[in-house]
Image (cartoon, rainbow, N blue to C red; front, side, top):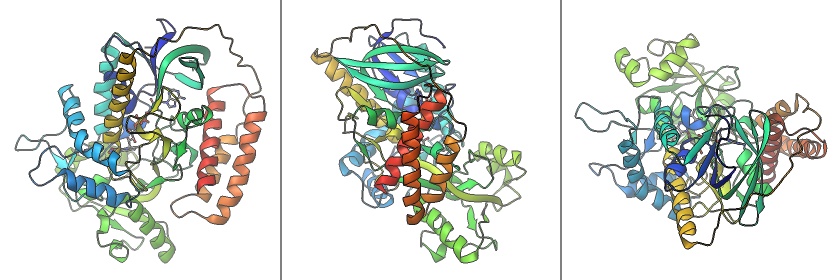
Length: 487
Ligand SMILES: Cc1cc2nc3c(=O)[nH]c(=O)nc-3n(C[C@H](O)[C@H](O)[C@H](O)COP(=O)(O)OP(=O)(O)OC[C@H]3O[C@@H](n4cnc5c(N)ncnc54)[C@H](O)[C@@H]3O)c2cc1C
């Protein structure tokens, strides 16, 4: 639905309509008045692109919570928040069961049980999936449920520009279809996703410019470990901006990773070979490219049956066919690219930030679950568990009676100003791509930091009109600056 038809005062404003935002909304009671924003059309979000699946221990035949916990810590290089990981692995399975009961369809095997796949860093097959389009299936069900709920308004092309804490709530400035609006809410949940678009090459959709992180930072929220960025080892190697992901589950199902000589090479770098955690495989590719002097790498799954590939990887097969590659017959050209953000807005176990009544969940948050490197398919699970916790904490606060609805105040929005110069966003992307990719370059980082700082000052002092482009550029520059500063 487009356009705000109800009151402009809400109990809860949720910024983001991906898995984290919609699941938070659906875990609030139906007498709570909720506004959910989607910056572009509602399917433009990382959740909708997730291929591999959701990692969860749904039975104990050959798996356990302890094994999932241990795999998560190993991938995260033991920099994880262990309490958060315990919550994730113990509570996550019930959230997965809940969305199944709501209609999310995960694949079933010939025995009539949930089909489970393997991805890098997992010691057991525990990833449930819907073919290779798991995220789209989850988004389909969760967004539909939100649209069916009378207390939830999901608005597309609605951009949060800024958030101002006011007495007993927030005043939020929005652009809806380019028009300025102002809404008030007692609570706010930021679920704005990642920062991939600050890079030239990323798997993330155009919405991923770090807006929630910038807005939280402006509100005084603490931002943590923003330099913990995951680079996926196997994106389709082409020159487009948005890189098409070749899911880890392709390696999980037996694909080999080959160098420019069409030789397997992972044994040079890690005994877990192709199924080492992502950071290890990405780093190995970069080291191998230095050794061979070539950026040409391939995935080879041609030894698998064509019917199996058609059925198991319909999305990846179709995406590769569009680029002239038949995965049953051809090698798939791959190279690492930006994929996921482990750091973000610092939150506690209830997804609360240090700003009263401000919550964050999903990829924009830092729960500490992932440590330095996310274990494959743990992020959708994190989005479910921690967005539910945000909702539960809001329910507790509301029932304590200390948070009356925030009153509407008269307010004028000034959106006049100069247009944003076209090259600013490209400049940020190029600087980040060169300075802080898989193996950071210290010299370039120092120079890039100065240049990003100059861009940031120009954006803040330039009297530019508050357009979506301007807000995104401001978010990109803010996040890039924090990353380079921390790194
Ligand atoms: C190609 C790809 C494959 C992946 N595969 C997997 C996988 O198999 N398993 C797994 O666990 N994880 C996977 N991930 C990661 C996972 O999909 C994401 O981490 C997760 O979906 C993030 O969910 P989210 O709700 O936090 O953010 P998103 O789904 O990105 O949603 C963000 C929302 O915020 C909105 N938004 C942003 N800024 C604003 C603003 N200023 N105003 C209003 N709205 C705003 C956006 O419009 C969007 O609706 C994958 C990611 C990608 C990109």
